Amino acid sequence: MSKNLLNNLMKQAQQMQERVKKLQEEVGNKTVEASSGGGMVTVVANGRQEILSIKIDKSVVDPADIDMLQDLVTAAVNEALRKSQELMKGEMGRLTAGMGLPPGMF
Image 1: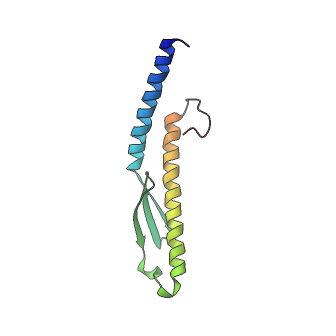
Image 2: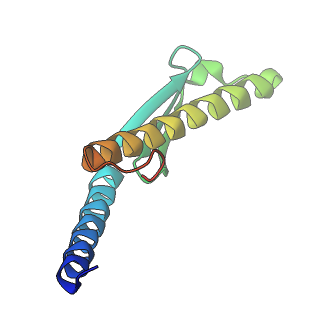
């Protein structure tokens, strides 16, 4: 492999690394929202898979049925995190499209 080719590959890898870092920052500032129980529990997460807020409708707060509330919160959080992961995966897919990378590289 020629030194020039190796230098070009290293330069391209560095540029890709910078683009990935920028994309991660941009996606980290985006939000996704998920709800459960017909909107009784709503969760907002960011692209860094951090939960930003949880809203619970007071009509679903029943001291006699805490299990249902816990289930609704769990379902909404899991859905918000799934959406956050899909957001990042989709953005990474657009970034790496046409590069011929094997599946799962990003």
